[in-house]
Image 1 (tube, helix red, strand yellow):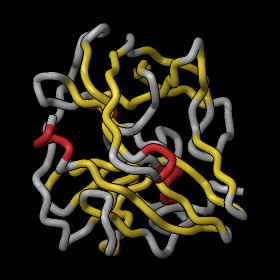
Image 2 (cartoon, rainbow, N blue to C red):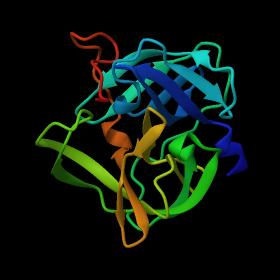
Image 3 (cartoon, rainbow, N blue to C red):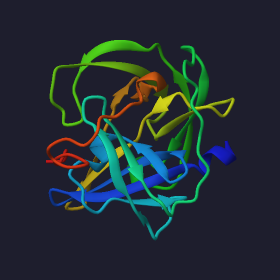
Image 4 (cartoon, rainbow, N blue to C red):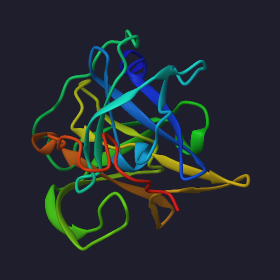
Length: 205
């Protein structure tokens, strides 16, 4: 887990006059995967290794608002990448790593749910859209789900928007537990940039 934590980063930026924070993970040298809503509409995205300033400039190289996945290029990052677990079985336990609510690095126990097609919303809260999702159940949706065998199943990044000192974190609280959703590894193929540029219009409003 200690080795895996080095490949989880903080993602920062601003869009539509709001500061936005989230988490991401290193997919290959100089490349980070995060959620599309974390970087939507930004022109100043940075990535912090170890969650510490200064951040490194990041450019979106793929952006998929339907599956809420974005891929960032950070040539100077220099962190080791994590590997995929292509088809982790439902019920597998692991740890959820990230920077919830732009706070310090956090690790929480988690469990993988059953992958299924659901009718939900896209990165902009618009819908309905059909998506293949894997529930991640834990005490908090902190960021990246990491299996105990050090392979990762999909992508999930906590997101927070700040406006006048107030914040809001994505996710729903059920029975005292924060539930998140991940994209199965076999669906990790974000689309190329659309008409709004490499990271779309603003998701915050």
